[in-house]
Image 1 (cartoon, rainbow, N blue to C red):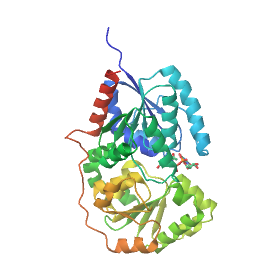
Image 2 (image 1 turned 45 degrees about the vertical axis):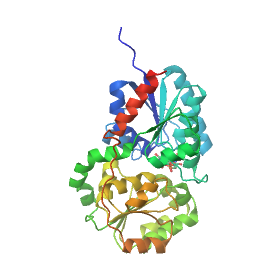
Image 3 (image 1 turned 60 degrees about the vertical axis):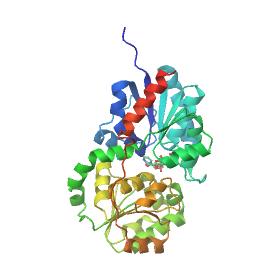
Image 4 (image 1 turned 90 degrees about the vertical axis):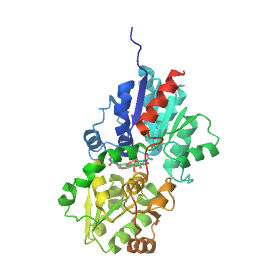
Length: 364
Ligand code: UD1
């Protein structure tokens, strides 16, 4: 009788998690019984389905449909719904990704059922407990049995915290995905044409962190910064930021900025294409800081700190919301060489993760 394949569940719910799942899912489904669960944290077409379609992700077998809500409501609803499912599916391990409420809810529910948790993108720290993501990361790392670190800084962070579970230096799945698409991106001009943008002659802006988008004064400062940029700018607006811009009465001010193109959130490849051809990117997203470093586009991070300190050596600059610093940096952008390898000892992150899972499950 053939041996039954181990059951691995991936719990995802937000945009960056779909991206991390993309290079890993095909590798896992060759070797394991891999089941994808969508928590429903992100539900708009532009925030969710478009990624599944474009990145050829396996259709989630279950959707917990939690939708939006306060942190407690979202986390609790995921936990209650996931607990039932885990009881039925009895997986050998549950993988959670990154640092969102879906990550923490998935990790807590799983660990309490005494099922092992694997954390992809473990060990990242901003050292700021006023960020919901930092709370999610730290707690998830605490209850994980297998921790996959993208960088050596992440490995050191876990060591300092005395986390002794199995820690693997896996490299970065997001880099793996970009590396596979790089050639197509260089050629692609469709999205530039759609928005009438000339390569190297525009800025790409994204803002969604709670610290920037939930506080009226910070969002107002962001709009003032955008108004002061004396060049063409494209700003795909995250739904949270759009809702707050309207709530705080700032939407009209934003729409009135000459030279600014405001769009819905963009699909993955369109966003990367813009990132590749932009003169610089201004963002508070962790993922885009990395993508910019990998592609070789100068990045100005609209925060005071970063979980990705390696990117500071590759042209990432912490501008916070200081108009003076941002404009001055834009006037003196550094030359950046692309790259940094995403492979560790010549192996892809997806291969390292899959092998570590095989060993871990085999040893149990
Ligand atoms: C979440 C993650 C953040 C990640 C980001 C990527 C947490 C705490 N934060 O932030 O770490 O970088 O995803 O995008 O988990 N909304 C919609 N449609 C959607 C999704 C959200 O309209 O499809 C709106 C809702 O009004 C919601 C708000 O956006 O209340 C915020 O969504 P939420 O998922 O709580 O956090 P994000 O800001 O997306």
